[in-house]
Image (cartoon, rainbow, N blue to C red; front, side, top):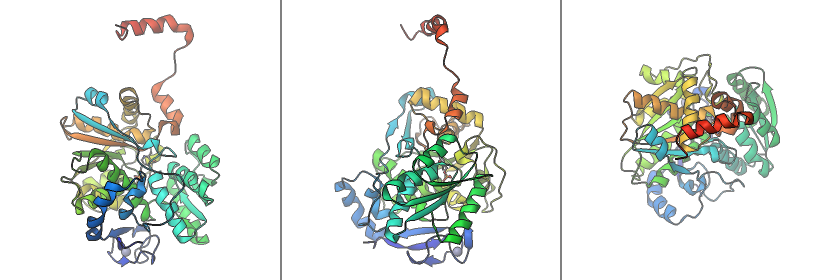
Length: 416
Ligand SMILES: *Cc1c(COP(=O)(O)O)cnc(C)c1O
Ligand SMILES: [Zn+2]
């Protein structure tokens, strides 16, 4: 059952392909020819609202009408989705805002947003009867693929930069992935994964080249809107941006709901990049569709990218939502990690804290007003990068300094 899917359209030359005709990028345009899955909105408009009203499945497959798969196909064993949405009142108060929501995707099964895409890749592998999936990753996409394929008996082959945080590599190896550490950057790992996939005919989960990944990522906004109530969307949504696949996907989710008439207003999407990896930000503000790679320098490894693969979908998605892009320094990112921890109880890896840094900056600049209803995505858990967290949070006091510590607590007035 797949009558909800029309075809896939190349975002560069606009040629269309039947669902099974081409699996990855547009043959006419090559690697830049990212495909976009198109749906039969008329059919879905008739079916989806009633379906959601009675559907008891809480994971991302509750939105099967908007996913690039058979609606009755085999699902991954590990459910993905339905992450908690917190009303972060204390953090909002600290920032002088009236309303702030935090969607904590660090609580997905392998602790990053990437699970939303991997779940779709696994389901597609079952449709195609594929026993091996490969991917390049800064760490999270790989850990996610490895974790979700493990119970399926599907082999995962992973290319990561040698410099990926140790927790992410340990996670991969624990899940039994075949891991190749590349002496080089994420971009080098990406090139190698493309070569290997082509040479051995492997199915690729590398970001952007596989168009069904952003369809998984869009479940972030589908879920957020349903949690808030479809008739009650926020004004602004913030997320961090590396390759651009997440934000492009979130835009797609909003577009689906908008086309279906399920949301009365369109939230604007704000993408936050690290100062040291700002390619998509720069394309956005140039007003053009010309991408110029840079050598990345940020400590936020998950968004450290020289050549963002999904930049065009990202830029078009942000423009379509009348949103914007902003950059923040690594110091601002680490400060934001402490804010999320201390005022919202959310432990984020650096890339996960990046949207909060963007929020602080845009409130100061008046781009976001304190009365707006804002939601931000935390895309990765702090346990992914303990060294980074310790750098910002410091060390515990020695028990030998107990009296001094108690004096501090007394003076702070919290005992009164
Ligand atoms: C991958 C990732 C991002 C960025 O997503 P892109 O699709 O590359 O823009 C942000 N945060 C975390 C934790 C990630 O793993
Ligand atoms: Zn094309």
